[in-house]
Image (cartoon, rainbow, N blue to C red; front, side, top):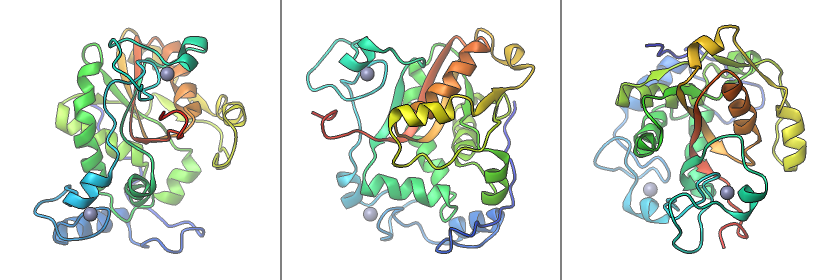
Length: 264
Ligand SMILES: [Zn+2]
Ligand SMILES: [Zn+2]
């Protein structure tokens, strides 16, 4: 089994002055030393990786019916394999998106606190919620986290998607392969760009290892990302994973952006 965390000791970037400047291993220790607290509002809760009742009620957990291709919630009850109009016109390259919650002020706090290393233990919480989607994959899948460029990995010290994937692998016994795909180009932050701009930038940002076909041919893949925004990153990765012979690529993420129009 290939379960490992790349770069366990991290450094803070100059743009993250409000983040805790501790090495990753020490931050993990702090996570476990403190009494359990709600990861959103900070009130004491009765166990690790639990939300307080108020935050739990305010998180927008996503549930069926949703589009079988992109995971957008559908307004009315539909058959299991229904697709939204957008996916019927332009089918995505992956085979579905499963997000735990809608991206909003509360759910984004979880993503940010994991991404910038103030609560690395949140990877376990996210993995616990992702476990319910594993059954949607056909057979024993390989967990593949969306990779970071090596310069970002060096600066941050860890890849949050690898941390989530590692916890999911630990909980399910599935294999994780965090090397089969890598980020060959450093891309600028995509926030604020249109879908077309994002796609143009990320489409050539990833590459496959030489032995990718050997690793993935005929196997289903669970592609792990923390946040699903426009889908451009996941699509670029899914395109390559399928090129390597992956039979199915299901995207699992903590939160996904859904506009008010898409939410009906
Ligand atoms: Zn709370
Ligand atoms: Zn759709």
